[in-house]
Image 1 (tube, rainbow, N blue to C red):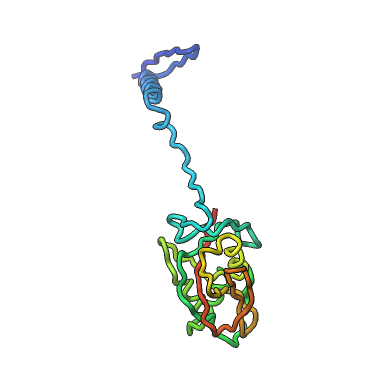
Image 2 (image 1 turned 90 degrees about the vertical axis):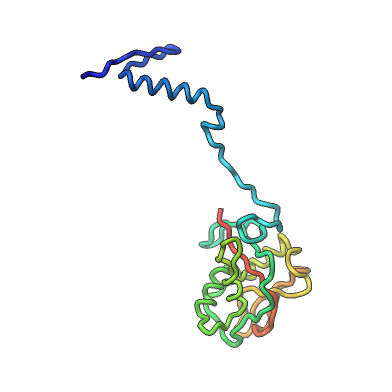
Length: 203
């Protein structure tokens, strides 16, 4: 049996079609007009970054500031763990590790722990094992990343000690940061300096 067609005209617009289809269109139109706008369209939610040096909920630490893209590392925020993981040796004094840089702490840490069957790199291992808010991608920051922290929020670090970076200077020494005045130099890998993990929050 052929479906009965009906015509609907409103505001100069005329529609014609099967009766059941026209009824569906009328019902949908009435429902959309009856509901408030908020029920029809869900507004986009934008989470603003907290102030630099303040906790970033769900990200495992403090907002260390925005880092522009460099080489093959996309732009991101540096998240600083809220606490140190202790005073530890850099490790493996006398061994010059290949493939380390002054800018990419994540790669440095991966290289160090990837060559660490005997756990010769305590500082890097402690950072790689650190977890917070369900994140387990922390690492020992490179010298440039520690300098970035000093520029943005030195107050979140202890002021009476040196902090290890993952950047190596030689087979016998690695770079550290002093957060009182931004002083960076190198120290023997066998010395126990403070260690603070960081991670990246990509945008």
